[in-house]
Image (cartoon, rainbow, N blue to C red; front, top):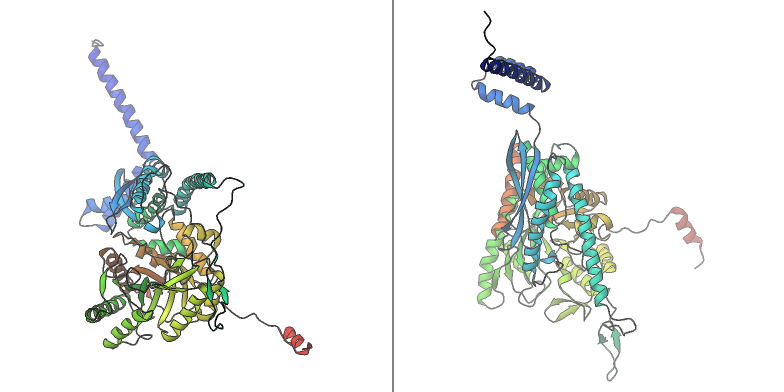
Length: 584
């Protein structure tokens, strides 16, 4: 007898049919993802290896088969730098094995000298401008940059940097048009008399006859170039680029310097050279008569390890402190403070005084200046120019023309040959004096541009000063990792030296050292050892050196190689013969 077709039986058949459909759909789904083959491979491999922890083994096995991580979101937030000012930190999150994970962060410092002028801002001072810049950067990251990068592999560095650059270009053009409109509005009406140019002062010629006023008109100096355009919010670009590079290195479980080096060379080199650090010992200019030595830096001799270099600088620093205390009691020189650069800020009355102080400290330690210790001077010439006088204020009340500055450097290095580098000895506008200085000193002293060069972005468009040994590069504002790589290639292609430098006000972020090692620059300009945010970078340098030593990948420089900055024109044999027979 057949049972009645009740609602309950129809429900059971429907449930069974639904279950079969679901099972069929599941089977098709897993076959499409090749799960049966993967499971069989995993089990066979586990059985062959017979690991002690089978579950962990299978977990690692399937992890290798999972999709690569992609960027899920990017977050910007305020943090404090070494001076307690707002700066930008960027966090990168990735989708890793179906989980949203924070991978890393990166911080980019806001340099007070590069603080932007924001449209519509009624605040004054660089601190307020930096705060506004950080806030705008955070808005850009949240509203535009983060969404644009979602779903992209973090390893696609060049693609991501191009996205960042494409995002930023309209912002730059908008700011450029705004400033041009402001300048046009501030221009005097047509037909009005323009402000007369400043005429350089005249001076009496020495040796003139009594009663005569033989005036010598000083050669006018080139006017200062307009400052480079800096857009509020631009640190978003540089910080995100660095954070993405750090993210890839973290996911690959390699140091950032190794990843940057692989980007530069397209493969991992067998040896890496550590850049020699310019370690700042002394700073002048805030007090006392001496103005033009913003930094006096120790340069370790070639062949010295980073550990030995830091220990040598610490010994010199301790000896200088002892000696300065003694001298200070006599009233000639006193310790004022520790500068933001992480070194002693002193006062001096003579140009030679800082170098004599270091020489005496070397002698007391049994070191030979020029053999065991070399020096570099950051002259910061752009800070010394008085445009009303058309001269540099080297000492308080003592002024020198650009030509006289060249004479000063030539004389100074003839008496102190241990000075092996001059940073910003002149303004960038004094191009003919750069050439004269290059002819006189370029074969024994690095003539390096810092503020006198361009930002990395503009450097890639216009090159560096032809009469310089190289340039200080800084990771700031809209500079991407790809920009840094291109800038180093450009400088090396010109047979010049690249230096990676800190900004004036730094955070405790130490990735700048990884960048320097990975980029393969010749020198690093890190500041002194008396501030924590600077010491953090030296600690990172020592850690990298230890890693490279342990892996037998540490290379070293054997000598200072000074780029050829000037050579006499070659005269052919035909030209010599023609000159010999030509009438006098």
